[in-house]
Length: 155
Image 1 (cartoon, rainbow, N blue to C red):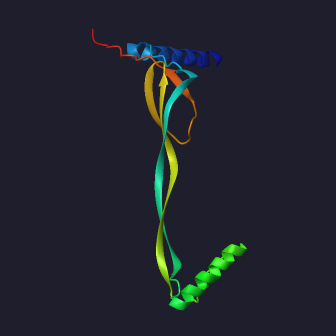
Image 2: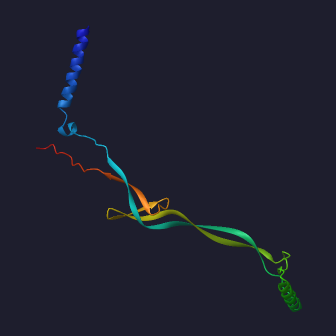
Image 3: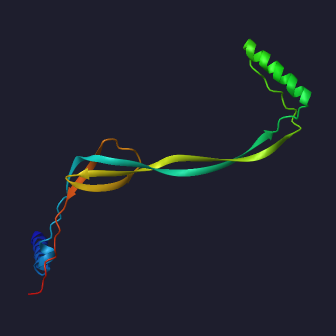
């Protein structure tokens, strides 16, 4: 029984080698090499923020000042002058709310969402959009990979 197992193993090995022998030459010599990578720093030339503009509308109460009579106006000016001379704050007449109305007020907000960064590395200029301002130097990944042309099988 040992001899049969040995013969079967040899037969499998021979058929596997025969399969390799019949493979095309290009498939036999393909080598996948790990990428050559290193890290370095590039000099930042310019950083430009990219803004997102948001608009919000709120409703606020807007009140008109209460109308005054001419005598009231003269009297309030005299009282105001005396208060200023004494160093007390002038308090405006409180509104009764009869002349108030809701008014829509639109506000605009701008916030930075990214940064366009111009930088130079070994004499070449580059531009990238980054999520944060990198400062004066930018850490970069430098990868070098050769271009391999396929070997032609026709002769």
